[in-house]
Image (cartoon, rainbow, N blue to C red):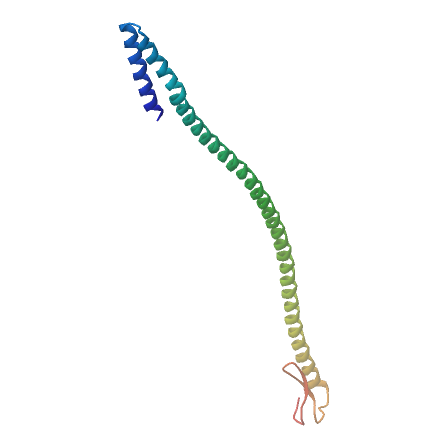
Amino acid sequence: MAKQTATITSKLVETAVKMIKNGVTPDVITFVDCTNQESNEQVLVAIQNGHDTHEAGIDNLCQDFQNAVEQLVEEAAVIADHQSSSNDAQEAHHICRASEAFACSKSRRCEEQSRQKWLNLRLEEEKMCEIHGEIHDEWCVHPPFCWKLMGSGYVKTGLERC
């Protein structure tokens, strides 16, 4: 629209210049005055309205952009807070897991030591029972019953020999 208005205005000015070159008459002066008045009342008003409309559009876009930047800054702060909380929770989790791993390894070590001691106890008990049996067979009178090691403990047997 601004281009059309500029074209129309330039044609009017060109026509007025030609008329003045050909000689100034009251009709030429009236034409120039009417053209200037029409230009001031309609064309310049249209130009100003178009300018104001475009300027308001640009202002609105700038405000929308500013609002988006402000919202981005706010959301970035929220994200940073979440990231900080996540990092803190992750660190606490890793510390907890390390503590649990240490306690678990101590427990496994203790269990293995207990198992080894139990196996050693069973082995020594079997040796002791064998030695006891040898001593008993060699030195003791055999009663009509005796105690024998069977499975997990001693059981009373009948009259057969121990």
